Image (cartoon, rainbow, N blue to C red):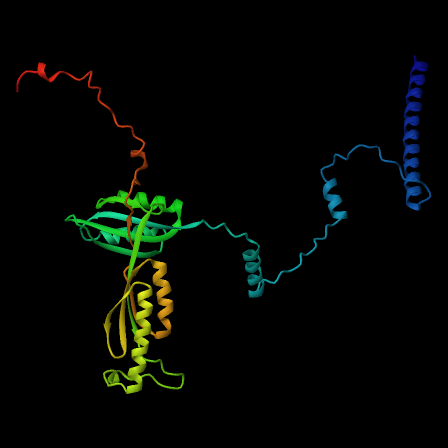
Length: 316
């Protein structure tokens, strides 16, 4: 029994001593490998290909490789830079296409009451229309007024303005003469000087000297100028309504373009005053109607064969 116990204890002591010796050998090998790597005599171990799962690996990497932020170039935000930016935006922005403007002639039949004219012009002003001429007067029917408006603008916006005018309570109807065969006339009263205009170095006569008698030479010259003005008015079928020793008043009733041409011709005489009435329009006579749909309506005919015999009706 004693021999067996000694043998087993010897075996245990041998196993433990071998384990201790193996561990000491491993530690020595690791120390030798570390010393060799530090001295640079041995190659470093190749990576195993596995990602390090340590949570502090990213922090260690960032500490070892600090990121240097590069500063952006500074931009001068002074007034010159702002002006340059606005100029670039204005010049590089494409221009919006302009709507085609047309000449429109509207004729409004309205009730003769206060405030109608202001409401009509207010609608046109809200739509951005600039009224060229406006003629308002009474008609042959008591209580009914007629307003003729001439303006320029896009056709689409004009249709919306016409609908708003028709919605007004005092407006009976709105007629569009833009594409209708019409007769248009405008009246003009212009006061023209028949005296020779003073030169650049001379001074004009004072107001107190207007009624002073003219000299013989000035009177003859004024009559010649009056004769020339009368010939010019006759070419345009105008009339001289008033004559004084220094002025003359001419009346003209024609289209707008003829009135513009007449004013250009009498401007060398010296225009003192000019009054224009505005365009008055009226559709021409003929088979032209404002409502084209009425022309296409076929009138119903009565078949006299199916009509009842009046002799069979009871006496009235």
